[in-house]
Image (tube, rainbow, N blue to C red):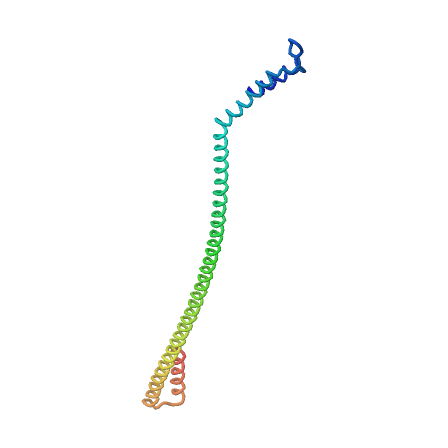
Length: 183
């Protein structure tokens, strides 16, 4: 700031007229003193402020370069993490699809096994029912044969025990047939 004021002051004195300062008058003493003050000011700045300013600028440059380097490093790490996450996600998707497919296959196998077992059980039940029906049929036929035999024997006994005439024989046969149809 002083430098600017001294230049302005010397410029005003340069152009002054007579005792009065004019803008066009030249004062060699003032010019020399202005130059001396300027040189001293520059030397003082160089001695006191130049090294700290350069040091601060260098330090700032170094911190900016470090920040850029760290940002690039973090960017690379972030990209690696993104790629790793993409890979992990793809692996998880593949594994989940594998688990789903295995579960579907297992469910289909269980379903097929259950259907096969149900069919086998139904076939066994039908076979058992047919066997039971056949047994009951045979039992009924056997029982019917026994009853018919018994009734026939009884009828024959009556016919033999009674010497019957034709009318009496017809009555006995009618009774016999009515007993057979009832049983």
